Image 1 (tube, each protein chain N blue to C red):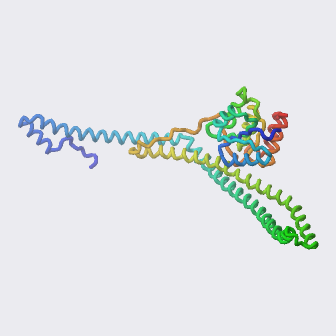
Image 2 (tube, one colour; image 1 turned 120 degrees about the vertical axis):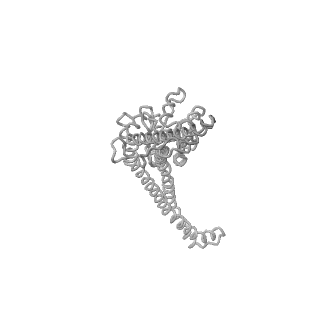
Image 3 (spheres, helix red, strand yellow; image 1 turned 90 degrees about the vertical axis):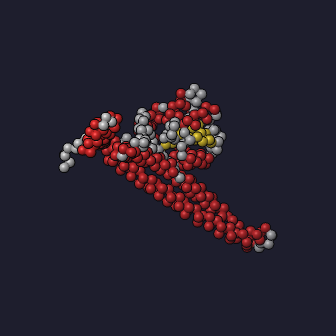
Length: 251
Length: 127
């Protein structure tokens, strides 16, 4: 049935055409011919459009097959992004624990300080009021002496714990660099998806492709924190390696 | 070593600038200033009488390595000591920094001890 030949002009249109011609109604007769022609032409243009879309889809699918960047993203960058995000979790975990360890060290020092002060205060106040017996005075002297002796080492512990807390905050910089790289990857995936959508949905032609490629190559590209330094031989593994390398360069 | 010298800390992460600022203060350097990338640092260096720069590598607009190269190119700044404190750990990067004339290179994460040691070394060499 689909192959059945459809006339360009229906029987009723043909009859009307003959009637118009017989009555010398030329313009009315021409209108019938034109309307039939337009219908045929619009059918042609529809098939043309479908053909065009099919070609575009075909080309795009081919270009996706040939786009090695997509393969790289799926095979390398996305697993890499997972590693980076896991590294972020590890770093924030380590920073949180380092900070809490330091707090655990500091709190007993503060408690001990309060306790010692409370023990000294009664005798001290007695001394200030000149109401202290010799025995009590001796006790006070020992208490104060102990406090002085312990305070130095406690203050040093406090100081080093506070420095630990300070240094633990370096995770913000290092994880920030990691997350920025993952954001770049997500943006790239987004632009590829928009590319696919643009092809599959002719109505979304207005969607703009992000052609703003981030892969402007520098001589040596900054890479940010290295997550798998042990597995790579092009990177140093800690400050000692840096020092060795620099001294080998005559530094 | 004049501990009152003017020091510029260049890093795009404010947390890291604060960490370095605090560590420097612990070491007695209190005259510190901050910039968030090479592009903001360079005019500050050209205008101010800075005596020492601590810079990150990976920053937007102007990276630390480019800042270092600009410093070495500038007749007025070329002798300014520059210490790089960065997560960049590729050998070729460290070599590039050395060739560009860096005075010290610290990889993040680092310790307060490392910073002190490298600072001492930089100034010891400068005499």
